[in-house]
Amino acid sequence: MNPKLSQIIAKICLGLAMLFTISILIFIIIYILFHGLPILTYQFLSSPIQEMGKKGGIFPSIVSTLYLVITSVVVATPLGVGTAVYITEYTKKNKITDIIQFGSDCLAGIPSIIYGLFGFTFFVIFLGMGWSILSGSLTLAIMMLPTIIRTSEQAIRSVPQSYRDVTYSLGGSKWQGIKNIVIPKALPGILTGVILSMGRALSETAALIFTAGMSIRTPTSIFSSGRSMAVHFYTLAREGLSLPMAYGTASVLIISILFINFISYILMNQYLKKYS
Amino acid sequence: MKKKIAVLHLNVFIKDKIILKDINLDVYENEILSIIGPANSGKSSFLRVINRMLDINSDFRVEGNVFIDGEDIYKTNVNICDLRKRIGIIFALPVPLPLSIYDNLIYGPLLHKKISVERLNGLVEKCLKSASLWEEVKDRLHLSALQLSGGQQQRLCLARSLMVEPEIILFDEPCSGLDPVSTSKVERTMFELKKRYTLILVTNNTKQAARVSDRTAFLLSGKLIEVDQTKQIFTSPKSKLTNDYITGRFG
Image (cartoon, rainbow over all chains, first blue to last red; front, side, top):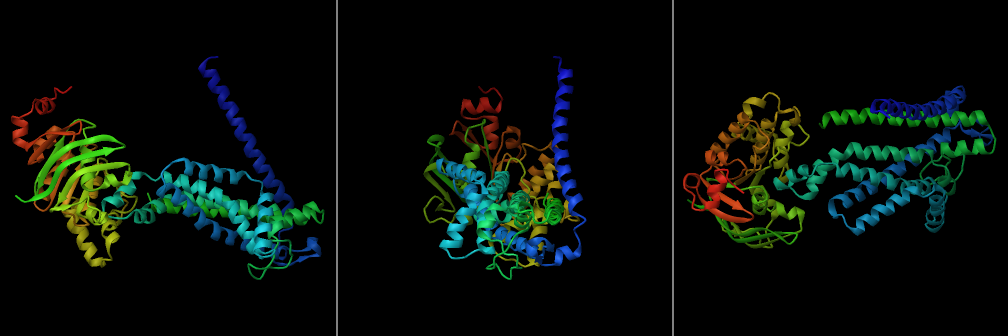
C-alpha cells in the first residue's frame, strides 16, 4: 500500500474511534439530563427523602455526599502526596520502591466491594465507628490513595533535577527545595490526581453501602450514617422505587462532576499562568 | 596572595569508578582559576567536590583533603548547607526558577533567615548591579524570569548566587549556551567579581580561559596535567599534552 493511502486510512480509523468514544459520552450525558432535568427543581434539591425516595427530594443525600467527598479528600490527599514525595525524593529506585509501586497499582484495580468489606470489618466493626460518614470516608480515602500516589509521583518526577540543585547550591536543605519549588511546580499534576479520585469517591456505591450505611436522614456530623447520591440512585433504580427520581439524582451527580472539573480547569490555568 | 582553597591528594570515585586521581591544587583569594580539559576529564566533578554537590547523588567516595580557609570540608561535623552558602555555583544551562525575577533573587536569602523587605530590596539592587543586569530588568522585576533571554537568565542566576553572599563562585561552563555578546557580558562581569570573590571557571572554550583567567589548570582523564599562570600555559606549556590540547591537535 502506498504511504499516502495508508496515511488516509489510518487517519479515518483513528478519527472514527474518537468519534465513537465521544458520541457515547455525549449520549449518556444527554440521555440522563433529558430524563433528569425536568425533576430538578429547588424543591427536589432542598426537601428530605420521603417514602424511601418515591417522594420528596434528595437534600440528605447531597449533604452526605459533600461530607463523604470532603472528608475523604482531606484524609487521602496529605497521605497520598506524602507517600509520593517520600518515594520520589527520599528513596532511590530499587526493589522495594518497585514493590510499593506494584502494590499501589494493584490496589487501584481491586473491586470496590472488597474495599467495602474491608471498611466494614475494620472501621465499622473492629474500630467501632459504626455505619457512619467517617467509616465511609476512610474507606473511600483508601480507594483514592493509589490514584493520588500515582499521579503525584509522576508530577513530582517531572520537575527537573536542576530546580532541586538550585536550592542545594544556595545552601538550602532538601526539604526546603521540596516545599518551595518541587511541590508548587508539581501542584497541577497532583491536583489532577485528586480531582480524578474525587470523581471516584463521588460515584462510589458498593463500598459505601457497607460502610456509610443507607440512612435517609440528613447527617448531622461525620459520625452519623448517611446515604450518598450514588447510593441513593442505585437504590431507586435497583429497587424500582422511582425512575424519574433516579434520573434526577443522576443529573445532579453528573452536573456536579462537570462543575468540579470545570472549576479545577480554570483554577489550574490561572495557577499555570502564574508559575511559568 | 592568600590561599583560599587547598586540595591535597584528592581521589574521587563515583560508583567505584575513579573520576579524579591524586589532585593537588591551590586556589588563591581574588583570582580566577580556569580549568580546561576534554569531556569526561573530571572538571565538573571537581567543582561538585568543592561545594559538596556530589553528596546529592550519594554513591561516591572522596579520599584526600579539601581545605577552605584552612578547614577540611570533608570532616564529619561540617554543616553542608553553610558550606554551600559560602560557595555559589553557576550551571552550564541557566536555571531560573519558574518565579518572577524578584522572587528568584530573594529565594536564597529567605532560605536562611527572615530579612526585612527594605534590606532585601537593597540586596536585590546590589546583586543585579554586580551581575550587570540591573539596567536591563529594573523596571520589570515582577515579570517571570523565564521570559528573559538566555544571557540574561545566566546573569540572573549569577545575581541569585550573589544574594546569599558567597566567598567563592564556581562557574560550570557558564557560557556554553550563550551567544558571543552575552558571553562577553558574563566575562566582563567575572572580571568585576574577582575583586571581591574567588572564582573557578570550568570551560570547554580554551580561548575563554585565555581571556579571563589568571591561572589555568589542565585536566585529562581525572589527572591534573599542569597548572600555571594562564600566559605561561598558553605560550609555553611544560607538558606536550597541554600543548596538544590548546592547539587543538588532541587525540
